[in-house]
Length: 267
Image (cartoon, rainbow, N blue to C red):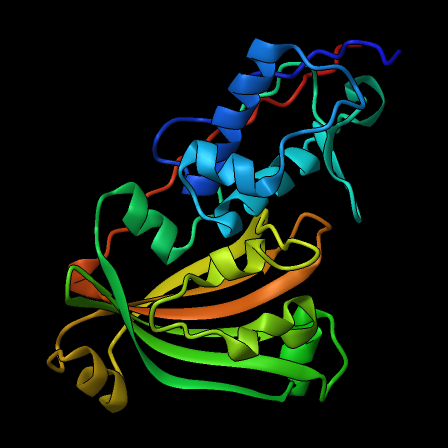
């Protein structure tokens, strides 16, 4: 008889989180209510997706999130099971989210009730250049998915976005229509799931190039905010290199700055 296991609480924040994380939080609440045992089998993905009113893609991303926390584990043919929390948990007993979360453009829009749309300028697979290969830790010439889009919120142009990802992390990228699909949702639905965990992010203001002025429909004096992001997955592997050129009048960057206390050693 498997031992009854306790579920760690406090893993998720509020409604600002992406849908898959909110679904994971609801599933975790249900697991608390039913007090499952390690080794108990979860309902099928179809049943869970119906219960929570989400797509199978979102449901799988939610399960992958719980798997990354050591709460559930999959098998190749029998579905999902409750993990042995005491042995497999990768977080403290009552972890909390205190750091900013990696959030895609579509995730942000959904959390704020905004409608997204995209105009695809380029979507192709090509060999990675040497500089790209170095940043993404792949071999020069390896297959790279190259996506260039104009992103809109409620019909208004906001950003010119250039995404580059190693095709090997998610071969479905090459077959997906990103005029409507979410890039991060596609990554989360990959096998195995690719969960954006941390990113190196930098931003600078500059004047637009002639092509940027034309694409973003701005004048010569409109400033651009250019953000460069290298995103890493749950295994600390770089999976996305992105440059975003925002219209200066339609973007604001916010961040929390913390002064981490340094222990003082006394003699």
